[in-house]
Image (tube, rainbow, N blue to C red; front, side):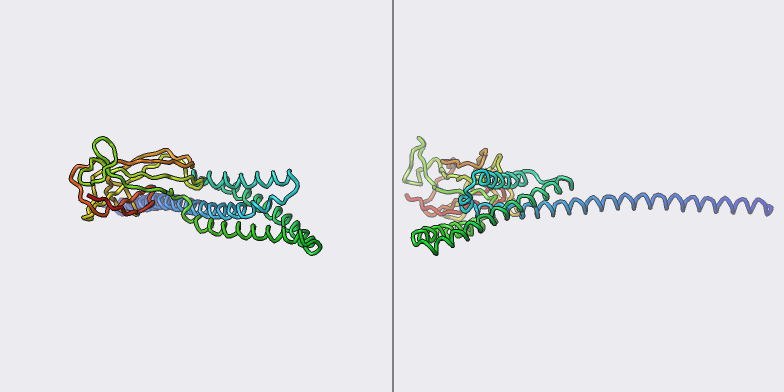
Length: 302
């Protein structure tokens, strides 16, 4: 083999190596670029999720502030201004509901909401300043007229009571989305569907309760899961499973309702008795939307 052929072979080998390196680098750069795009998208989504939570908190606080000053706004003698105040308060409540139902998906929509919150917050400050101004005028009148002073003391007491009510409302806001239940009862029924005093003869157990009005709870279909535990500590029935705090729990029975924020009275969940029940203490637990709604104990006698 002469030197020319050797040179050609070496040059070809070098070219192949260079081509391989170029292909490798091109693939690596493309792969890194795609990874960077995906990472950026994830960061933007996390940022948007965080801003959703911040907006939800800001709206909840603004809503509480409007509620707090609602009774004071009555002192605005101008009907047009009072109507604008009520419109702003209603808009805040609507924004809270919309954000609970569907999270914001892009920056433009987030900026629009942020601007609107700023406008509403400015309106609230304006109305509060007007109320404060009126309060100062009333204070001057109290110094001149004893009867007016007595009326203003009553007003101050009323405002204080409203403030206490609003403090209680603020405490409940952390669980605003949770369904509430009242009037929970457990009743044994005979084969005719009538109340059976002797639990050993029961053919059904009926749990009755009421869901009161709650405008903060997201509306829609709600599945309520019932867990009945007998005196022996064992779960009665096998009505399927549901998720609660990351675990899968067995339920006795379940019922699906359409919740629109209004009170639903007399909700009943039945369990058909498939064994002889013993007298003693029974535990009723109700779950929905990953919340334990209630846990009550009832004594059924023989």
